Length: 281
Length: 72
Image (cartoon, rainbow over all chains, first blue to last red; front, side, top):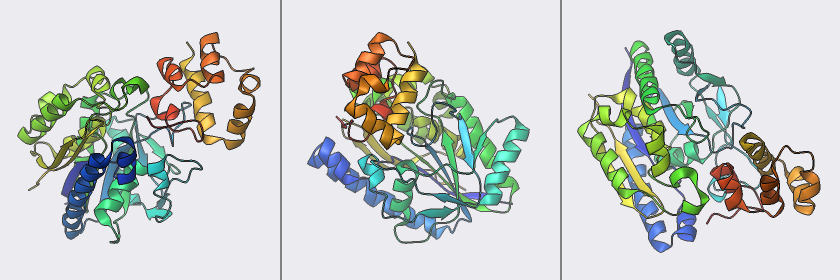
């Protein structure tokens, strides 16, 4: 019988020059502090020796065009490539020196997809979607030079309306947990993104966040109040710039009823940064 | 408002360098056949990212088009 051996969620632009440029020295310092914490979390994750690592993140209109935007998508196949895009935004360009391909845990990805379809989750499948910073910035900070386990990349549509509701993302996470429990593998799961930034996805509001909202939802995670979290509406997530919390909702479904332990919480003004883990078993 | 058409154009500007270079040299000509309102067309031709965003253009697209976008 398989089990989840490690679960954590964290912000995913782990690139000090970006915050230095857009926020100033305190932005750089804060993200460097977060990265040190994430690196330490990676040592703990690696020590659990997972057979596979499920990574729940979102697409920033790098991968899926407006011609077809899956609500949720499982990456299948034997390997997944790093996104290569001419003129990419700076924190994606920063990935240029990384490995070009990463192994996919084909068997677990297939089970999540196929059992999901049987269970009523109409997941999309992709054989070709590449990984941008939302996956690789946290992964490389977690693992550094250590080899990564095979991945199961899982996308949630966080930005192109209509979005999957929080409760549906939570249910997808419960499904992933069932698949893991029924399988033979020890699995890590991480979710990335957030916290609050880009309220209403409005260019005029770039540079602001909703600290009160973030304190509230992190408190719910610490108390294991998943009822309040799954009751969050798409409108609330949009207004507070918490779109990427949908990735975290998948993880919450997978680990429920576990309570979160906050490893880092930083209020930067432009965004609130966080790293959170869920002690299991 | 043709939100789909605005975003398809933004996505192509992000991904297709040749299209982007033609747009930069003569935006009105490149957009001649596009299904846009006059307001949308003006926002593209004058390259007004804030207006494009207000008209339904994805924030993540208007922030990430090479040579045209700046993170504020």
